[in-house]
Image 1 (cartoon, rainbow, N blue to C red):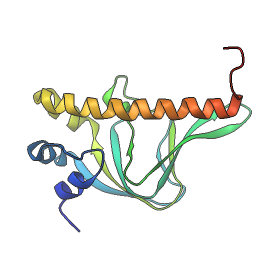
Image 2: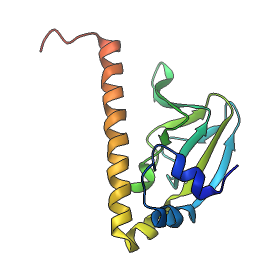
Image 3: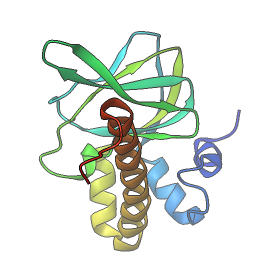
Image 4: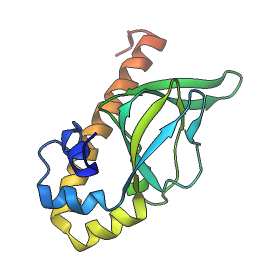
Length: 155
């Protein structure tokens, strides 16, 4: 097993990030583990961190009245989980639940926001990377809606 910095450097989300920036964000990171069925976070709770998934599978769920929890996306090894720590009011918009044993690197959101405020180049680089994740997740949600509601013949 490598150092935390080498683990971060190998994760697809942080691939190509400058070594000094990896060193800075490693100071806000820790290894975490979730067992099958554990909630990683719950909708409306404080969003105080994000996760790089190293192993496992996580369901992003939304509660739908008269239906209960509905999985809107599945996060797996190599993915990043959570961007709500980056934007006020810093609260989760979904539930995240481990579908199997999941190992991840967790980042303290407040710690990282403070470091990004001091190093705007690092902040900009992370925001660009999170913007790509948000774009991909929105596209995924759009495709799921098309599957649920069929093609829109009225367009």
